[in-house]
Length: 314
Image (cartoon, rainbow, N blue to C red):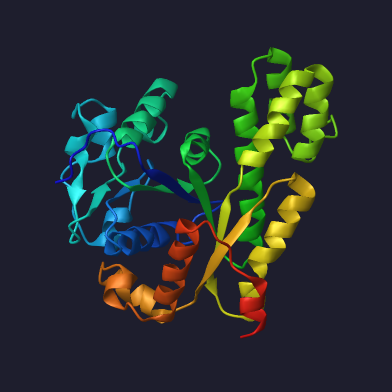
């Protein structure tokens, strides 16, 4: 088992989506496997505190879960680590039993985030649940890299935009100290607010009118908020180029830089591997979706993006 002392070099990646069924757990499991096959020490964390299923994609049965740590049954988080079939890949399974576990208190949540980040791995992959709850957003914002899985469908695209906006506003709210600024941010989170705030740009202008210094700090925060997008289950060239359209829309309406790190082809081998409870990259390493996943991981490691020319030349 890995030594679990604090490491000075690690990256935390959080994988989320605006709605359920976008393939977050599938992507998380295979990204973890791909990294471990490169010789990296990897921890997969099922941070879906309401309905954990990451262990199923890996074909393991955990003897302890985050529930045991959150409710105090297990005192040290390293006791919740579950080995996988790969020697340098470990799992922390999520919770699927108590409502209060799915909605931990603020102090519990912060303690959990700190303890996970203290574990000694080169890569920690957080598999988050669906939606825009505060717990989920805080996990996403705590990561070094936030990754969004989106399907080429109107509802998924719309919910992804909503997630990005919610994460952005949540970050602003945590920065704000002035009660008036906090109230303004809370009001702005209602898309039909009477203040006319429709975009982060509008919000920044309103904040600056109340507290210019805070307005400047929030503008600086915009520059460091750069989520990554993966388009899953693509079937056509139009699906493949969706990420570029989303990147342009986020820059225009939100003022946020979104990186399109790749797509994953629709592939029947995916559900076949899932049915066998085996990660696709291990079950069918040369399948189209597996090749796409490896390219996504390469782009994430190298902080690179998908190039439009690579699709247009296909």
